[in-house]
Image (cartoon, rainbow, N blue to C red; front, side):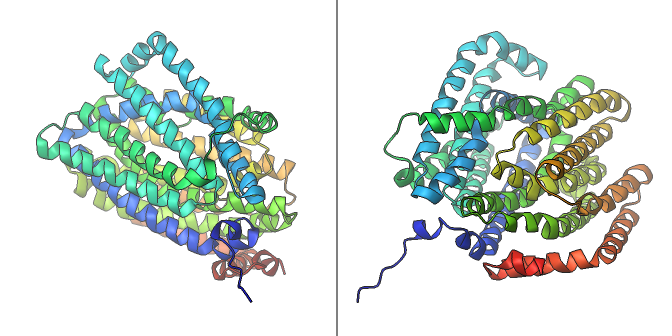
Length: 502
């Protein structure tokens, strides 16, 4: 009798695959992220040594300008591609309709931005104190980044997260190699180094499209029913993208260059980039969970996702906060030594910025994929509005008096408000009960306040660890259930959530 072998694509289309390969996927993603982090760290170290704080601040300003254009102009529909791409993949084994329907939304937005750029781009460039010749580089970086985001979302839709992570590592490698080439040829200006951030995503994008070719080609026209669903899903994200930019480090760049200097922006950006690299770990959890949550919904088993939110997420949040505290304590000692005297302020910034990363954890690891899988995107919009208001007001109030430390704490407060709003709304709209997720982020917040106000690095770490242990003892039943769920998930057991619930 002929044996029928199930194709890998067919196997990926059910929830059992997501659970069975969940720990392997995440381990591969973390490994790729570690490699990406090392490459990013090396690229930043080399760039700062070639250009100094002021020159590197120019590179950051170009990136900030391009991100402003992308986030406000085209990226507001990006998540809809992975959301409905997963659904299409589970049902048909392809992502062509989602890929091309979102592309036909994406394309006119890009054309409009390019056509109107002479009206607003000179103002944006001058606001960041960039030379006029930076304008084409800003637009080129916007185009490369926007297309790369589109391809990444398609990879997530096809449940190719490991490939996506590998391509992100490849992108970081290209950035480092191009910067190294500039150094060896003696052409290390901030404009030339900015080219590295244009060419690298183009290379990764081409590789991703080649892997997706059988899932997205031939080109198809707009699916009107899917277009309506995508726009309904994305419209709340449009204002969220606008106000969300106001709670990001890219808006911080405008405040820092206005109140302080390009050199200060270079220092702050190094600290924030290191924090952002760490933030990829909870973000990767969310990227693994979104396909699982969507697949569970298609299969009518969404109660398993709800059990994850109640049992595993608070424990993950506490562990993530503890890891952030350790990173802040260690980094406060070593980063100033690595980057030199010009970056002596790096250590003090790490504690509040790592607290911000810890506060973002529960949203990235649970609440965002959970609400997006239910297509309830207005929650992200409301969280972004609250976060943006806090960030803008506190930047205005704190930076002139406290400098970069004020900017860091404005970011922490903004992340905290966003998480609080999202948690409250998700439980009001989608989930019953009140797990101890918010309590789980309190230890590192307390530790960061001690480190910032009293300059006590080791004491801040000790207090954070003691409070974390106290919370684990206080919620020991929930912690035990969470560990059981994660352990079963790590083993690939298809009934992992049910075991944890019992």
